[in-house]
Image (cartoon, rainbow, N blue to C red; front, side, top):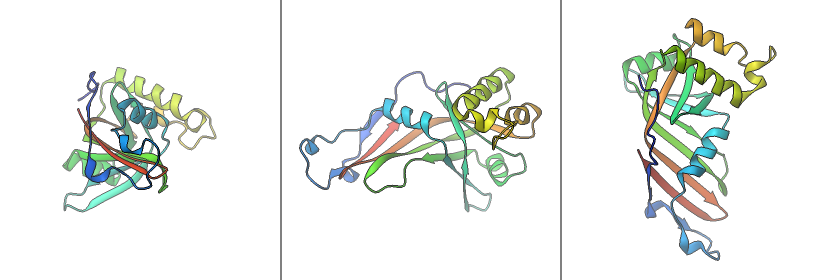
Amino acid sequence: MPTQGSAQQPTAELDARYSSALNPLPGAADVTATEWAEALRQLRAAEIFWASTVRPDGRLHVTPVIAAWHDGVLYFSTGPGEQKARNLAHNAHCALTTGENSLTRGLDLVIEGQAEPVTDPAVLEEVITAHETKYGAHITSPEGTFHGIGDSFRKGDAMLFAVVPTVAYGFGRDNGVYTHTRWTF
């Protein structure tokens, strides 16, 4: 089971086919790949992610999840009987996406990798803490939407999955400047 992602920075590559200055602005000719540090900032701040998994018959399944970045790994959860868990038992490949729904601003991110169940109690506790820190009262308050999720992880009522990125994509938009960055790990 992966417990930590790559300690080194991923290689960033700008895909010029999908990167351009649609409305020439001063400096627009200097379109560059998005720095991984900016992608990490966005991953850490994002509240909702979309998990994409593959059903045994090849059909896709996409659903919103909460997720936390910790030690180079993106962690998300699901119930053991939910479609995501059944799909991942058959095919561990998945993608997690997040971003803004805007044509003119923001950075959309796609993280691809294999989802592995977290079974190490020490890692489980670290990731519970990461979720509680990130989502605050949504998890820690009795009125929170996901209150008690940590205990659900500990008891096995909810499964926690680790996705170590193999490749990631960033689709940036900033006032007419579009970028497509690929990070390889």
